[in-house]
Image (cartoon, rainbow, N blue to C red; front, side):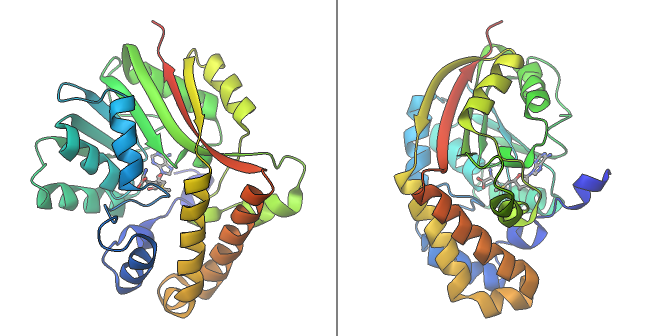
Length: 271
Ligand SMILES: C[S@@+](CC[C@H](N)C(=O)[O-])C[C@H]1O[C@@H](n2cnc3c(N)ncnc32)[C@H](O)[C@@H]1O
């Protein structure tokens, strides 16, 4: 494990049923919209994504950074497709497998513990790869994109949703955002994403900005952290809790200043 990996730890957040996480999750999603996501994703968003990506029973889909498995399991449930998640945090993988079992979807889902930079899958394995609110954690996105392309079938598609940022040169903001969500983050602008996708050999098909609903989600996370800060501090540490409130505050400010947004990027593997 290299030094950077040591920081990759979502263990507390992936314990979806810890008393503090129950409080946070209820404030953000209530009962109905809690699908076991660890992100700004909502079920409504996934309902729009499924037809847009033509996900159906025969689709073999990879979820990069599948977290606690919620979104992947939701898609498998809605479409009957076969889903494979790759996730670096073992608590995430454990919780994903449990969620899949509780949903009766063990046969439709597989969750692998591993690094998306070196995936344990043969080339040409998937029709579609998705990633939801993960990409900021990858320092070398061109290499990640090449690895995704390796495991995609010819003409397979790669669709990701990611925050996009215009903060280069703003050291104060970078400091406040540096390890948002507990792990080191490497922020890219939309232009930089486009360049890196092209370098990795992808053809960009479609880019859509989702900012209004995204702002609502970031605000919900921030408000939940503020509301339950003393409980969260007991479970996740005072320093972490303070850091997160500042992180979400900074994120919201950037959105309001139009320096941060959220894009869905859909690409295809041209081979
Ligand atoms: C913000 S969460 C999103 C999880 C999930 N996509 C969702 O929407 O619920 C980011 C996830 O990426 C995982 N992750 C970070 N680095 C990774 C890597 N190198 N390979 C695979 N997963 C990684 C984290 O452990 C975490 O579970």
